[in-house]
Amino acid sequence: FWLKFELFSGSDMLRPRSTPSRKAPPWNDMVAKCAMPQYNALRDSNLGHFWSSPRNRAHLTELGLIDDMGNLIDLDQYRRKFHVIEKELQHADATEKVREREKERRAVDAAIIAKRVEAQERRMGELRKLKEHRRRCQEELRARRELQFNVSGPQSPKDHPKALQG
Image (cartoon, rainbow, N blue to C red):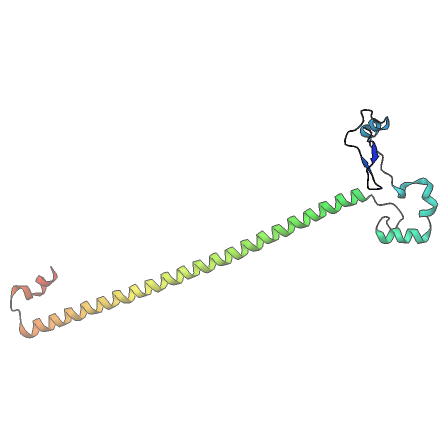
């Protein structure tokens, strides 16, 4: 649609009127239906003499738009290739991080198992010492009772060694 402009009082500016006119311009429909082709100056045959100068070729090589052989580099293809390489590197980094975390986890697990084994061995040693102490105490008690029994003789049936065992 066409906008009509009017001069507002007190200013030198033209502003669009709030009500548009009903008639649409004839070129409006064609622009909406077809896209404008993209222009690439590097592929323009009329600029071939410009791009063939050594100075411009050196500049394009520095920018990375042409290779050492003088062939144009397709930037879209290069970007896609670069993106794939970038994704592969990210994947490799992620895999390496996972591998490192697994290695650290295994080291922590091994340390935990070693501590558990050490604690269990310590408990078993304490139990062996306790059993040995009890066995010695019982032997001493038995030896004292036998000594007492041999010295004084049996006083009552309760003091008899067979009665004590049962």
